[in-house]
Amino acid sequence: MNIALIGLGMVAGTHVAAIKASDQDLALAGVLGRNPERSAEFARRNGTRAFGSVEDIANDPDIDFAIVATPPDQRKELVGILSAAGKPILMEKPVERTLKTATEIVETCEVSGVPLGIVFQHRARAASQALKQVLETGALGTIATVDIRVPWWRDQSYYDEPGRGTYARDGGGVMISQAIHTLDLAMWLLGPITNLQAMMRTTPLHDLEAEDWAGTLFEMENGAVGTLMATTADFPGAAETITIQGTRAKAHLGSGVLTVTSLDGTETKTGETASTGGGADPMAFTHAWHQSVIEDFAAAIRSGTPPMATGRSALRTHAVIDAMQSANQSGQITRVTQ
Image 1 (tube, rainbow, N blue to C red):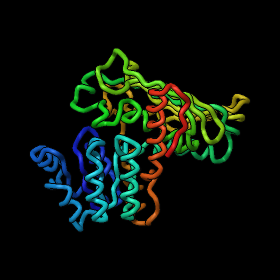
Image 2 (cartoon, helix red, strand yellow):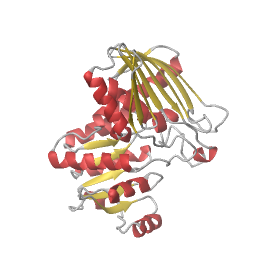
Image 3 (tube, rainbow, N blue to C red):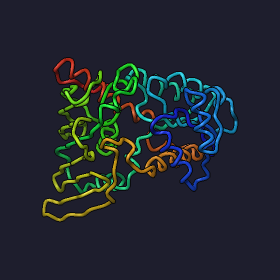
């Protein structure tokens, strides 16, 4: 299948590496960036062509789907053009800056009948898949508590890029740009968050418009209660974790390893330790997880089945972040609505 890559920023190289590593008959058929000269150079280095516009991609019958990796504020128009032409879209998180606009994008694709997948690559990790199976068997018992932690670090130089960490371009700070992955994974594993209280702050370690620290107390539809802490101000940065306490056993997911400990002390481990980009280098992670997401999306197009992470499923995560922002402003318990 022929793929067009739109957006040549930080994550573009990961997508290129993922496509080239695949043995599933995938090819990078062209790229599109904001700067024509940079796009041409990127295309030359990667043995492909540079498109002149999104319309060129939409009108090209040889392009099977597009990967959209632009900043969030550029998504709506691109999706409108691609979906009108019937081109399936695989999009980097988040869907957009706000729940309202993200919902409009998802509905645009649904009305057009165009597949929309979101790159939530943490769902593709072996340890995440293993935990999903453990939960489905009921091995943990009734879920009582959930703890989500994203103790990451970013240098100030990360936020010095124009627009980064602003509401106008990104829609917020650590929650929508970093912790969205772990939040999505937690709800993919356990179901929706229904109510929450939140604080979102900017620490003295960074100069940015939005938050670099967020804390939340929440309730889930399954009856569990939980905590979330996410930050990019925890030097030198560590892997994100999800810890789930059940009435029969506890599960801890971190650094690509799942540890399940039963209440009698029996312990099992699954997976291999891997970096997830929690330190100063945000790209310090393998392309293999993106490869799994891209291959899954291609398979979904071929079979007509939903991809691993649909646009509609991504709205649950947007709704929680939206509720956190509201709760931070009001100081009140806030119901998550979608």
